[in-house]
Image (cartoon, rainbow, N blue to C red):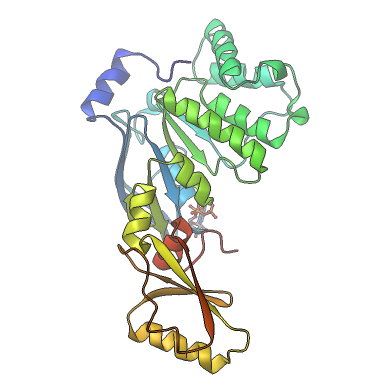
Amino acid sequence: MTATTETETTTTSAAQSNGHVVRVSGLVKDYAELRAVDGITFSVMQGETFGLLGPNGAGKTTTMRMLAGLSPSTSGSVYVAGLDVGRSGRDVRNEIGVVTQHDGLDNTLVVRRNLEMHGYLAGLSYRESISRTREVLGFFNLETRADASIYALSGGMKRRLAIARAMMSSPQLLVMDEPTTGLDPQSRNRVWEQLGALKEAGVTIIMSTHYMIEAETLCDRLAIMDHGQILDIGEPDEVVRHHVGAEVAILHVSEDATREDRRLLRRKLEEEGRDFSEVGPRFLVTAPKGSQPDVSTLTGLVPMRVTYRPAHLEDVFLVLTGREMRDE
Ligand code: ATP
């Protein structure tokens, strides 16, 4: 399946953007008194999969809506394939495929007609839309379900169909809000495979996710957002190493420990200027840019057992935002 519409306009535009399909600069969104997105700047290279991660309400969906031209920005700019999303109308919209959290499929139409209809709405002719539908059904392994009702599809198939539909105009950029939320592990894997195949076909992907494994599996780079701002951008490994080091020490405070013991430990951690968080009955201690945190000064203090595990993105979250990725 071709990933991009091979027109002169888009090729020229991509070249003008130095290989960056997306350029976001000083982007702001206010909802009345609330600043939901607070001056973010980032670029995404052609063929990259870029993740937006952040706790609930961080501003990910609002950012993606502005990227996709679904919501006007208060200030700042978004360029996709060299075109100003705020001003370029259908030209730029055809370069952006959008998959929202709610698939938005038309339940009154069968699978094939959902795709064809989207094709016409994106400006394809009747013949182009039929031929593109055939291509897209094949790419997403949905041929056998072409005449099925939407009601007959599993959650995973609906999600794949929503992605397939977004690809009808052969966009350069696919924007997806939480592509696998609510799917079982097997369906999630199928969606990941499909996104991997789109990446191989050269499609640039921007996605939000609450799943650490999804971000680590799919994203070349990611931005961690909170309160409408980007706290850091980088490759997943790089972000983890930078903020929490290679390993996390877990202090399992004994059940016999008193509240005063926990207070003592907390105070000692603070005095030593440690990066730590309390998760239930445990204390997690990290050492930014380091290998394994040295907790020898803490072990005799209160009754506890110490174990170590590799650091991951969830730990970065706790350190940067004080919250887990999904904290409701
Ligand atoms: P989640 O992970 O829960 O989807 P998010 O990171 O996508 O969160 P947004 O949905 O972008 O966050 O919301 C950012 C902030 O903007 C939140 O405080 C939210 O309540 C607010 N918000 C979002 N949409 C609107 C709207 N249409 N009107 C007013 N406030 C809004």
